[in-house]
Length: 220
Image 1 (cartoon, rainbow, N blue to C red):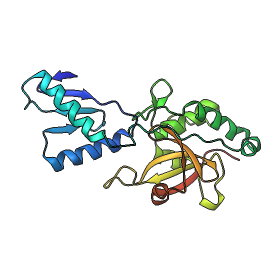
Image 2 (image 1 turned 180 degrees about the vertical axis):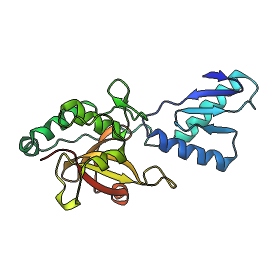
Image 3 (image 1 turned 60 degrees about the vertical axis):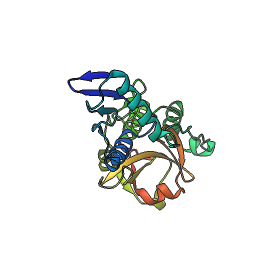
Image 4 (image 1 turned 135 degrees about the vertical axis):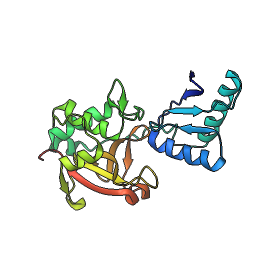
């Protein structure tokens, strides 16, 4: 905890999607008319100076944040593991490199703006890291929308393991356009940096509802 003028800042550590959390937290705060506000990075809880002592501020921050996250399974979710079929890996050596690197990062927490293992990743940072670090395609660090624009659009029925899948509307109402991405690994599965880096089943209604499209970032 640190004090900056009349504002105290408490860093929230979580494996979840920080932007999703700050949108949700601010909504709950507004609904409950509390003297709290999450900043636009989603990692700092700002507490106004209505509390008179340092200990009161700590107690209020800890109890409030704990209460919000107590029943939120996404905060402590364990990564879903999955074995990509060997025949898919053998069929595309570049795809095999992407999967090998991705598997090393299972369980890494979501960090807004993160791009490499030293900082951990956000969704687009994870994809950018996979392609660049493996040499499959040295694309540098791109955001999700830029990744989609960079790649060649692919129809769902033509998607192959190694393509990138994109989603919209995963950050709540009022957020337009592409908001999330992952690496398609075939058989209706992807690996992505969610909360945390994990495999995910694309037949789940959540992903079906928010599906945006596929893009191909390398020839295969």
